[in-house]
Image: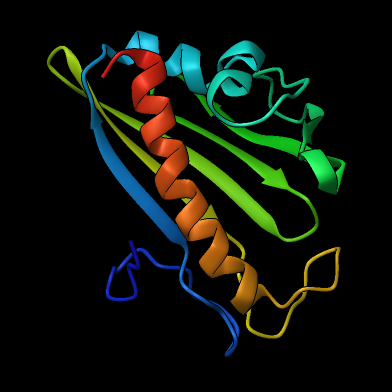
Length: 149
């Protein structure tokens, strides 16, 4: 889901790449979706094992399997509508929730991409971004299944 024409894409330096954005309508109330994206157990069920706590400034780790434990820091907790955290040295993940009756519109935003940067593992952002975009497409479907969509 490439959103290069999206007015909300990341802006910044000349090498900035657009944020990855995936939006899905979930057949679950906002409270159930919030539990899935703002608790350690919920995040582990559809994304990665972690020691997350929904407290601004809290430092935690995502267990990225072969890539090891990835350091993160919670930057925004605004229940039930928004949660953001820094992931690794460059990225920011944001989960946005909008109540739609007994359903929830969920948007995942993965920002911090730059054509001039490489990951901690020496891979160019431009290459990793495409893989991550595809990965997120699958993970939001896993989230949908987890919350009962």
